[in-house]
Structure formats: structure tokens, C-alpha cells
Length: 446
Image 1: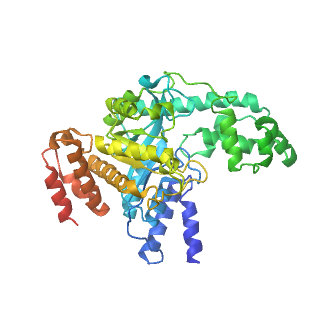
Image 2: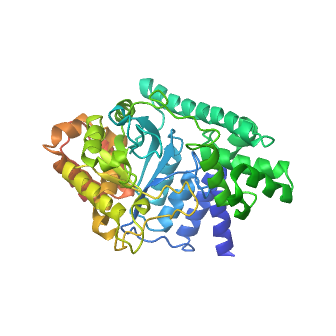
Image 3: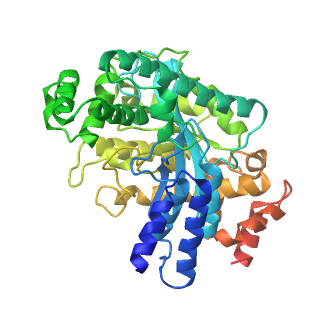
């Protein structure tokens, strides 16, 4: 009975009802306190790049669900990242505190990089367009220009989806979507993504056609490869819809221009002003843009980037030493030389992606220590910025460290040694505090 109860509560963690999620987490914690569920000590694995259902999570995970599973799995640090919004931040950080989980939150979007306007970077088939992140945001409720910038990200993304849907509707007719009725109902906070739209098309087609006609429809629209996909909404079908209607060459695709997304520098200024760490992203080093590694990193840093994100599973094949893996080692080495903290995770916004990377694998073990260090830095920034405004990008940090290596060492030590239950002591410090005083206070509170 206990196992069934826990599984039922875990399912409720993904409810669109926030009160139900809160109650489910409370009940799970009661099971922990009663000794019916044992949570392990934190180990060394991390995932700071998990999308939640506030944008799109392929498993439907809410912020609370990811926090719970991260704690159950013994992650040293966990972080959420959603597209164009900070909707998951407050719930995830609150759940982290309740679960004694070192937690942080960020967002991801796409930006335009003028210096690479003729070269593909990490958005396939789209020269000059790059994914870009902000990590370690201290709060979701922003003010002034930062609040307006964040609102514009959401509005622009949703308008892009609506325009895309109208073009795809023409191609897939008689399978046509209504954005409010068919798409927005799939997300709890009104932040739909292309993947929600794909799911909505699969479900709408099921409404329009019976089984035999459904298969014929998808073969007609997607090609003969659709004969073998699982209906009505299998992974291969959803990927096929996205690839053949929404990506380059698809019926609904319109190539972005420099006005379609914010400039990298403007986005980085927004992240900085909101208290986060501007973060460039890396795909696998195979594109023309990423092959110009040093130039790309120099441009990103000049535009304000202070960290770099990796999705490790995209950079290696287990048991294989290939160009992608060598590229990963090269960019990690460069990041270390420049003092750029690393942010890593598995995304979980596409079927088949792992909950956490295998950092003990032969391929990742040489860089796993670097990834753990980066996670501690981001966590320490997050809590110190929240409590006292003394984060990684702050004027205080600029004034108290002679170089980035010294700053990284402090934030790593703080992130490694600080216990979640003692985060409150950081609120005692102000601009006149020294790094040594902070570390001593944290040491004394252990």
C-alpha cells in the first residue's frame, strides 16, 4: 500500500492545480519523516537544465516533481530552465528548501548574434541565431525594464506560435487547431511551445479521423515513413510533425531575421539586471559557427556572457571517441582557461532524454569535476544574490576578487559547504562583508 500511495502522490505533483501539488509534496515529506521513504545523501551528479511543464517537459514534470525526483536521486545540485519565462522559479526554489535540495532556476531563449549572421551556430539551419540562457535568477517578479523585457519574450514567443499554427493549419487541413482551445490547455501557465502544438495536432487528427483514415492522413502529409509511427501520438510522429511542418523546409517555417529575436547583448543585459548569470550555450561543435570556437566564445563574452551551458549527451556516444567528444573537451578546456562556470543538464523536453547524465562514464569522467564545480558556483550565486544581493555578477563581487579564478573559488566553496537549511544566515551580510566572513559564518553554522 505504501508504494501505491507514494506513486499516487508523485502523480499529483504534476497536477496543473498548484494547491494539489503543494499538498502532494507535503504528504510525501510526511512519508519521509515517518521513515517510509528514505532520501539519500547528496552525491556528485547534477542537472541544472531541466525544462518543466511551465514550458515543455516530455514527462510532464512540474517544478515540484523535478525537485522531488532530484532529491530522491541524490543530485548534488538541481536547476530548472524554461523557455522565455521564469514561471517555475518560485515553486522550484520553495520545493528545494523543503526537500533540503540545492536548487537554482533560469530561462532559455533564442537570440541574434550579428557577428555570426552568415554562420549557423546552434540553432540548426538558422544562421546568426543562438540559444542563450540566464541562470541563477533570484526571483521571478521583476520590475521596470527587466519586467517588460521578460514580458516581451513571452508575448513574442506566443505570437510566433500563433503565426506558425496558422500556416500549418493550411497544410494539415482538415486538421486545424484553435490556439486557446487546443494548445493552451496543454500548459498550466499559458506558455505553449512548438512541442505543445505538435501534440495538439496529433490529438486533433485523432478527433477528425478514425483509425484507418488516421494512418492514411499522416502518410499523405508526412510521407511513407509515417506508416510505421505509433498512433495517435507516438514520439516518432510528434518529431515528424515538428520536423516537417515547423523546421527549415517545412510548410509552416519562416526563416527568422535579425528582428525575430533579441540581440545577444540585449538579452545578457536583461539577465544581468535581473540578478542572473548570462550564459552562452554549446551544441556539439559541428556547425560552422561552433567550429570557430575561440571567436564564438570571445563574441559571447564581449556581449556579457559569464558562463557556458552544455547538454552532455549531445556531445558523446557511449563507447565512442569521436569529433564531438574532442570538441567537448576543447570547449571545456577553453571555459576553464577563461574562468567560465559550466552549466549542464539533460533538458528532458524530448522523449528518451535521461533524468541525469552518467558522469562516471569513460567519456564524461574527465570533465565531471568541472561540471560539479560549475553547479556549486551557480547555486552559491543564486542563494547569495537572493539573500543579500552579493551574487556572482554583483558590484560586491567585482570589488572583492582580483580575478575570476579567485571569484570562482569562493563561490564554489560556498556552494559546496553551505547547507540548504542554513541559507538564511546569508541574509545577515551587506556590501561591507568580506568573502572570508561569509565562509566563516557558513562554516560555523554547519
